[in-house]
Image (cartoon, rainbow, N blue to C red):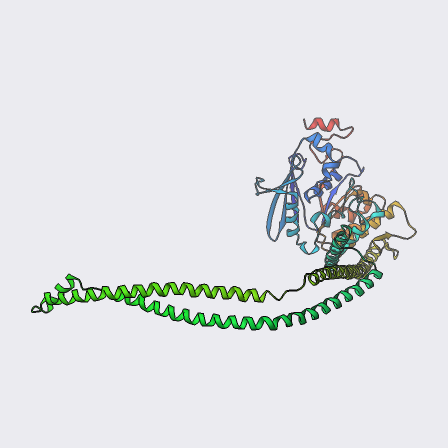
Length: 544
């Protein structure tokens, strides 16, 4: 919850807040321009609002740019921030000494508030959640005919969405919406394909004609396939005999090639094995056999060398002959492969048949494409229709349920505050809504039913706070205002209200308002250190 605001431009530099009811008090004369609404607008600013920069330009003009420091307290921990009027789009995270430690965009800051107030399940921005119930003079949400509008231009369907999310009834509806969105995108894509003439659109009559044509095309294709099969079989019988003979020739050549490769491998092995004995090896032999005659061994080795040269010459000649023969055999095998391939290509389809098959296949593809496109478009259109109906039905059910909950609470509050069984009723029809008290259009009634709506929402939902300006209480019976104050006070969530002339509400209520006041203002003690309203010259001189 919000616990403190500090500004060096305030008359009271530090302003402190409690849980439950928090009151800015005006004086008994109901003096204007003393800062009651401005204080509430500063609260709205601190809670992420922007209206301050539109309605309170005189404040910045008179005081110059200034900074508001504020503190929240959650789960035994304090969170410090500040907002400088010179930087409307930024908020600063601070330490307890009011020193800036981190810059935040407004959205980042309000996301922090979502987390601190534990509002993630509502699935709205923080401002979307709280803006409606921050009813302050100068904002656009005081029109009783648009009781659920946070701003003038807000559509009634968006106001319905607000309640669906505030009451966390949107999840089932969101699933349908997601499915519907996907189908509508698909429907749009199909329309683009049609508009760009990528696929020709056909009517239901043309669909039947296409189905007949595609059946005829497929029958003709099957007939051609059967005739081609007979044609190919006749050619195949002739070609098979020729290929069989060639294959036999090839097998014989492959066997010869294998034998030649085997012989060649043996010759290469024999050539590698012929090796002479070196003189070093002979000397090593003498170490173990001292009496051996090296000369005789050398003579024998010399004889062997001569014989080896003769054998090597013969082996080399054989190798060359075999290699040459292998080349010839390989060439013959390649020629046979060419002949076999040539025989296989003899099975050809006459060109006229090929052209006809091409034409028929192209026609079949086009007809099938149009038929499939027709069915896909019809399917998607029907799915969109079903989902829209489902969405509409589900939405109406949920809104009826919400309306019943709200109306029961409003009736109870109306009995408690106004001692009346007549209470305003909220109802929904299509994408619009009504919120009214039948046969009563008085100003007091108008603002009282706004109060009832906000208090009902405040008690029924996770709304973190409400802010109500004194204008809401002006035309309501004093006794009824007194009871309204009690309702605020009975809620532990923070409510911020501005009110004046409190004595007319009775001693008990007056004391309650005094005890819960965080700021007391009058024409001699305004909000800021400077009073720029009319007839404020004397007060200004006191601060110079």
